[in-house]
Image (cartoon, rainbow, N blue to C red; front, side):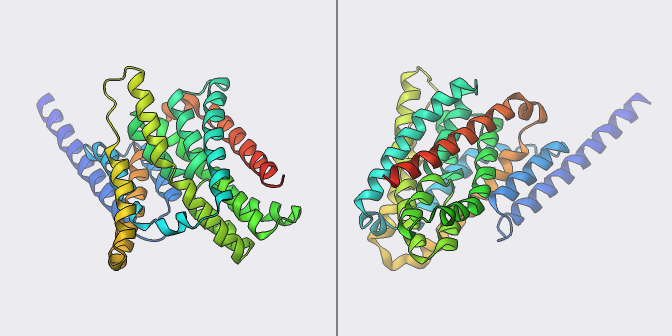
Amino acid sequence: MEGIKAESRIELSGKREAFHNWLYAILVCLCFLPFMSPAIALLAGLIFSLFKIKHASLHRYTSPVLQLSIVLMGFGMSLSDVITASKTGFVVTAISVVSVMIFGILLGKFFKVEKNIATLIAAGTAICGGSAIAAIAPILNSKSYQNSFALIVVFVLNAVALFLFPFVGRELGLSQELFGNWAAVAIHDTSSVVGAGAEYGEKALQVATTVKLIRALWIIPLSLVIAFLQKNEGRKSVKFPWFILLFACAILFANYFPELHASYDHFNWLGKRGMVIALFLIGSNITLDEIKKSGPRSFALGITLWVVTAVGSLYFLTR
């Protein structure tokens, strides 16, 4: 009798695993559709985790998918726009990135947030939201829940900024150019920077997009610096982030061979969709215990850092 019950349990477990695998396959396919945004994908993953829907082996591919997505997105970046960007935009961006990273890490110690989470949130705030977090995470060897905390904080604040910034800009009477610079420096993800700039005006959109592009390129030096610091801390498992160099090569290749522009658009699209898949996998691989571990402190850190960045950058730009 016990043997029959054991066989039944094994059979039931096998059916459950097969069903879960099918659910994962469906969600991965949905990630290629336009309505599946990074935020929705992360939320879907969290729901899977909440209902204990797990895939036996798919999560091992999360890091490779993240890295490949970063490289593919490099084909969609315009080097000419960066070169022709204003000197002011570059200076503002450089000061912002360095200041936010340092201040974010210090705030992390103040709020007693785990070092990896604080570094990821700081990188997401300083550079380009989810893309920066995805690039830095493999170098830090951060855990899934640490990546998720950082991504959740950035996505929530990013959504708020999309609606809040144009309202504040009009209330303060900011010019198109000034608002474009401010949005590019203080809003996390490129999508919301573009959205806020378009809402404010055509000139604001042009300035915001160009300066944001400069800001996004800071992923490369920041990744190399973090890899160097990790090595100095004696972490033997830290590997040189070759995918960041491939990311830079993708940018250069796309701009030196513009005749392949149609293909680059496809690569860039695949990179963005790959990022969505990676976020789904990250979200589905955490537990409620991990969420409770340092969630409130992570949000306190993210909100404080974002407010200081927004106010500080606006003050700097209006001087």
